[in-house]
Amino acid sequence: MQICQNSNCSNPFNSYGNKFCVTCGSSSLDRVFKNRYTIQRQLGEGGFGKTYEAKDADRLDATCVIKQFRPQLQGTAAFGKATEMFREEAKRLFELGENHNQIPRLIAYFEQGNNLYLVQEFIAGETLLEELQRHLFSEAEIRELLADLLPVLQFVHEHNVIHRDIKPENIIRRHTDKKLVLIDFGGAKQITQTSLARQGTGIYTIGYAPLEQMQGYACEASDLYALGATCARLMTGCLPSQDTYGNLFDSLYDVRNASWLWREHLQEKEIKISDNLGKILDKLLKHLANDRYQSASEVLQALNNSAVSNGSVEKTTISSVPTTIISAQPTSIPQQPTPQSHSLENASLSYVLNGHKNVIRSIIFSSDSQTLFSGANDKTIRIWNLQNRSLQSHLSEPGEWIVLARTLDGKTLASGSSDKTIKIWNLETGRKQNVIKAHSDLINSLSINQEENLLVSCSRDKTIKIWQLDDGKLIKTLSENAGFVYTAKISPDGKFIASGGSDKVIKIWQLDTGLLQKLSGSPGFVRAIAISSSLQILASGGFGTVINLWNLRTGQIQQRLEGHNGMIQTLAISPNGETLISGSDDRTIKIWSLRTGELIKTLSGHNGRIFSIAISPDAKTIASAGEDKTIRIYQ
Image 1 (tube, helix red, strand yellow):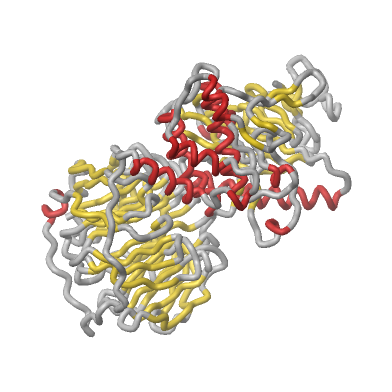
Image 2: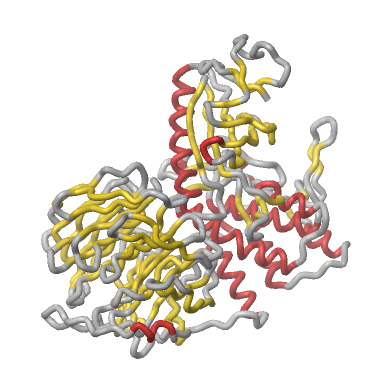
């Protein structure tokens, strides 16, 4: 394919052999688009534009997907509004792809010649539609599909985005790890307070979209309906079709009675499924949105419960919640016990804590190692007594995506969340003693240096802020970031701050003078950082499956730790600075020697991504938590 080099051309793609652009008449034709992309072939075409496969010269000719958005709108005002909405859409897609490895990454976004373009990661694999052409899906395969895709949908919905076009051809089984990847967010819609109350653009596929979506309204339950329809069609093999006159034919859905006939088709094929799965599919496919599951987490819970009733899952319970708040801690800052490096190597699962109703984002130990604090998307901070393995009390947080930090003396807890504020909690009373209006977007991490009375926060608003802990006064804003800041940690010796985010660069900040050093070489966004002051090593992870160990004296990568099969979400280093613990999307925890890079042990058991790991100050206990809403304690 040839590309018109006129930057004002409204449609620069031309077939080979053309001497002049068929759109603008220019004779300047080349094979490269935007001096970077070589178009290989057209993948698809729809009402909003075309999709192309291309090679990206800036990424070693890696295959990518270019989506051309050509809104058929009249007038500059209408096009300007479409451009603004598409730009906001691109920001959301960027955030989704950067933070979940089952969603294609957004590589670039740009405007040219009255067209808008998205460049996304190419996913090598087969769509479920292609798999369906070879065989019908069994109940076990449908359960695996739901277990794999529902956490992705939950993640998407938690970021206030509705996909609006879930169907077999938009789900790819990736060749490399066999994970299901949700593609084609071109029709995705951001949920706002007003969008739920007004009619939107009708983007849907007949045979998968519920009534409310076809009438211009879309909500989380709309995506869940489409997922249910996908499952029904994969089990029966019945797909909607159109005749030569455009009339729809769908043997799986009775339009007159607004009812699905998937049970009848399974019976005809003499295929049996369990009553539990049947009830789940029936509820997913309810005609009215309010009669369906209202969230992906509800469906996951039903799926897990049905597995329990079949004897395939073992549940752990906790005791009832006492009404007392956490007991007062000593008034002076306690001395940390001398940790034993060998204790973590022998860690094994001791017990599981249940109680949170949504994804757990952050966990930290108390200074005496007897209490654990957890923050979750259910808008609660829970305080666990580890001696009797029960919930001691809880604090209410107005926001989701709760991250935590505490002081060494155990008296003060800081929390940040999607409400963009930092709360300072007095743990002796269980009450907020200060609320800081901190950022203009979601807060991603907090770190405290009690000796210097400092609190450090970082946010999706691309800033790092340093606060006085006692009164919440802003000391300094560090804003030299090109993307979202996902993590900012004060080093254990209190000498510097290390940060990482979507711009792929780790920055070292001097507390008093500002930016000190940049560490480049990460393959993608940096999600987690941990620092060993004793060994002068910084560990980082995020996009990809490799953990990088940086020498803080030279600023170079001194070792790469390989062993995970998923994105690195969280890192923690033992109090003595000798042992690294990592948690990943692959649902495993790995224990490493920082001196040798040796993988010491792998811990498994989680049923979802692991978002947070904490090591007790006495180095005898590891806690992990994440997507499956459980906290696992290893001792």
